[in-house]
Length: 134
Image 1 (cartoon, one colour):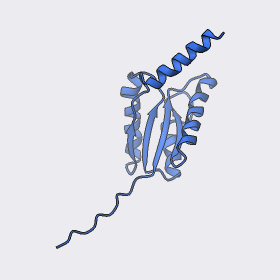
Image 2 (spheres, helix red, strand yellow):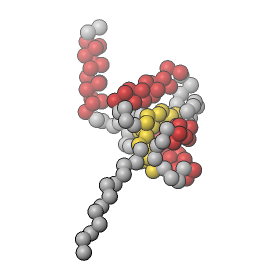
Image 3 (tube, one colour):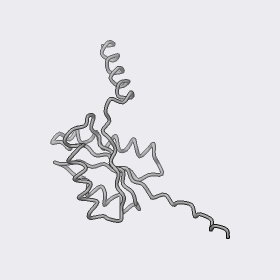
Image 4 (cartoon, helix red, strand yellow):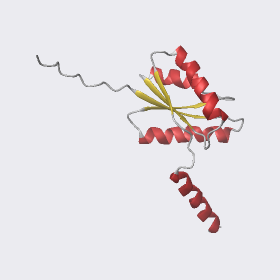
């Protein structure tokens, strides 16, 4: 007896949410908007939104709803934080769990903070070089 052919695994429609802390300073809040826009440009097939943990909108919940309205089935939360800390270890996972409970049909994943990635080192060295040119 021959086995039935396997059906190809359907990939979920993915959304990326870039999340930061949120600030009373509008210039600081615009940074995550700009980063999300750049991610969107580089990932044209994916849904990309931004969110703030507190102080200003959109919240994580609002960003998830926006992603869902665009057809997302899987949400990848990308913390726009340099180092691991209370927000990346506790607050964001708790917030994601709370939102996931209200959207049980969506799958969620959380990325690590930016950390000491070599690309961060390159940016620091570029900034140092810019200082030497002043």
